[in-house]
Length: 197
Image (tube, rainbow, N blue to C red; front, side):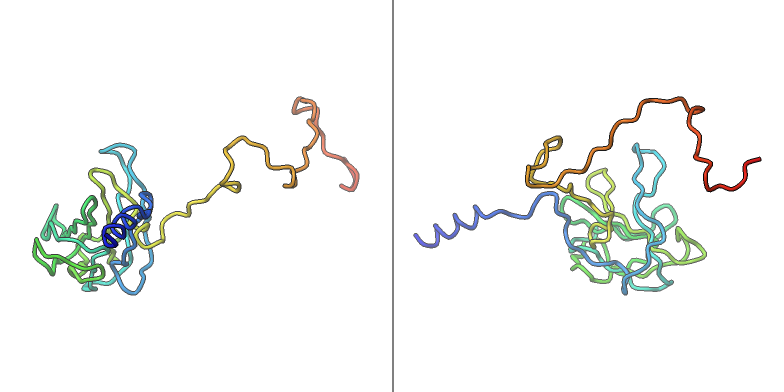
């Protein structure tokens, strides 16, 4: 009876927030410089940058950002590519010489290959192009390591938009409205500018 009650209580506990990104590992160690940020395309075939480019060095170990299973390890469009699936999402790493075969289960931070120079997005430097995809939707992989764009919360999170602040909160002083004037009617003050020709 106690075990059934405990199981029921555990099932009622709130789980992770669905909008919370998983916590992952940087695919290059130490934490690399970001050379090119994520710029999602506006359409399936539109221009954009479907991942991030991380500065590295040829031969540097490339690590899985999240635990998962290797679903691709080989050459694609002339570049070495490793893809690791994580359930609903997958991460991609290129250009990489694969160090694991397809089907390998990897832990977060486990080496999946080595960074190649040929095929680098920032040639003549070696850069890892790191992607994160859910279905056919590209996501910002920097969200996996807490380095994505800052998400600002509204100042008054507990109130709907358009409501007035409570009486105990100070209000911003309102400025009097100025009557509309044509541009030519406005002239800067001339005092203190020196002689006028």
